[in-house]
Image 1: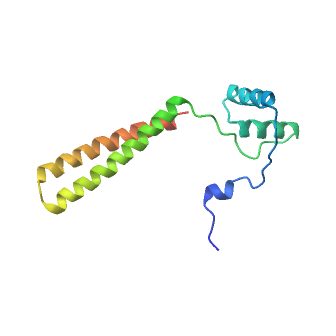
Image 2 (image 1 turned 90 degrees about the horizontal axis):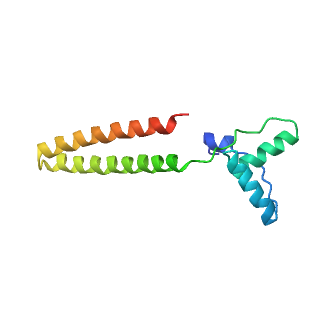
Image 3 (image 1 turned 120 degrees about the horizontal axis):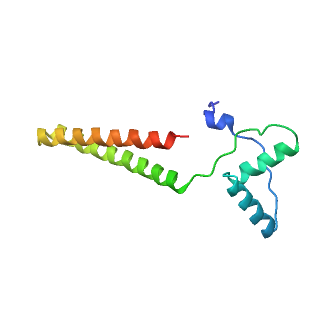
Length: 125
């Protein structure tokens, strides 16, 4: 039997599907957004409070547009890194131009530094 990964072991097993009126749903969505939470995390918090216990896990915070943009940038930088690695490898293997390979290595260093800075911003509280 295959072992489950960390996120699979931490996943909540049970689920609850409910129907709401459009008005109640809108009120819930607005309250969750105002609290900076997704709807599920907000409802889990309400249920835990009503039952007098701690939530089963920390609620997920909504991702701001800036964080989403930085995440997209980090992904694009990673893809550019991969493409340049493949280019540098092809140039090195063909022996086409040692100076071109050296330039690709410099570009990789710059992209990696950019990626480190971007990820550091994403990890800030």
